Amino acid sequence: MKMAFTIAAREFKSLFLSPLAWTLLAILQAILAFLFLTQVEAFNMLQPKLAGLDNAPGLTDIVVTPLFGNAGIIFLLVTPLLTMRLITEERRNKTMALLLSAPVSNAEIVLGKYFGVVGLLWVMVVLTALMPLSLLVGGDLDLGKLAANLFALALLAAAFAATGLYTSCIASHPTIAAMTAFGLLLLLWILDWTAGMGEQRAYVFEYLSILRHFQNLQSGLVSTADAAYFLLFTAVFLVLSIRRLDYDRLQK
Amino acid sequence: MTVLVEANHLSRYYGSQCAVDDISFTLHRGEVLGLLGPNGAGKTTTMQMLCGNLAPSAGQILINGVDLLDRPKEAKRHLGYLPDTPPLYRDLTVNEFLAYCAELHGVDKKAIPGAVKRVQERCGLDEVRDKLIGNLSKGFQQRTGIAQAILHSPKVIILDEPTVGLDPLQIREIRALIRELGREHGIILSTHILTEVEESCTHVQIIHQGRLVLHETIAGLQRHMHSCTLEVITRIPPDLKALSALPGVLSVEPLAGTRLFVHHGVDDNPAKQIAELVVASGWGLEELVPVKKSLEDVFIQLTWETEADSE
Image (cartoon, rainbow over all chains, first blue to last red; front, side):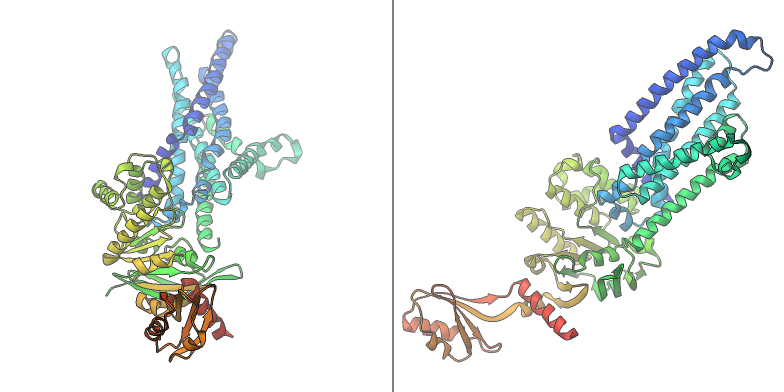
């Protein structure tokens, strides 16, 4: 497993060698800052009305939860761009042979690539948390809820990255990998919409929807079922990726 | 002598097309084995199988006694591989890249800087070690690729066309390097160039349509290349009948101008008699050389033989 960390460290550093990681970080911060300020402004407007309510939503509910919800959507757009090159690029540049002829198993290659990208995504998650934390200067936050949101977003990023890695394993071109990952994730994200159709509800779709599990966690209700959903989701795509590399060696 | 590579009955199919058909060979320590063959003969496929990049459809590969298919990680420890396109990360410097390769091959952390430095000296990369690989010339990139393959001093080094894209001086350096490495390691290299084989290899294999048509030492190859033709050039046209009458001469084939080919039997070479006759008759001898068969000739001869055999 040591090799997986070697590959992950290299991948993580390489991401910062290209302008891609920096650009994504900058754009993410700019958009989130805008959303954050809008939410804070909304809270200021609502505050007098909220004061009169019993059991009114607090600062955390009005600012943090929507902010992390939006960060989730941005991750949906950004992750495929980060993961699309993981394996496709190695194949296209013929550098895959280096990894394949080194004493490294396919599982280690996949995990290494995966953790390299997840590392960057988790940096983004932490950066997202910094803005709400700044509210501590002038107000009170429900830190438990903030932690639940952080946890939810970290799991979401992990699941997205695994999907992206798998599409990068099967596609021959980075753009195709990105499109496939994006399409797949968006579909899983919106599956939940059938929930509104009264009698015709499809419980399977509801269960499969990423959004449903993400929102459950976000609400501060950290249940094993939702966490397990994300972990299983991640594991399935990682195993599929390893299988795909094995298959490459056999078929080609 | 230690057997470093043992390939038993290797075959590889792409769909229904057979790329490599039942190839077996061994490589010992201190041998440099040259794989020759035209494009699409199965050289690269064979090499990819030996390096574990491609699983053979049938057969067994032992690297230093370890089965590559059963215990790939252990077997690959003894392997250094340079594919036909050097596997380089363009946005790393030579130093960073080689350090990463060393780590991947499980070189001890403390030993990495030393190993990287040594290999840079060996491959003449000192002056470019802090440059980005993407900015290097083709020759330096190729050398970085070779450095990557020998960095962890593997027992078996596999080089797919190592001198492609290098200038003549660099080619000489790399060939010298290969010969030097060949003393302590076992090397397999593939090439199109015959002189490369003659200069750097101890053994030759010719592959044609996925089959092994020749496995020989260099001396054996030279025997194959020896032909039974002399090329003669004279100042004034000679008397062909007189030449044909010489003992050992089978036929005389006039070419353009005063050039002609004299074909002779395998056992007696009439070069001396021809020279004497030409000089005695005052035709003015300008050139008398044995015609050496090119690799293509040997190749065509061998492939004809095998095709005839199979019919």
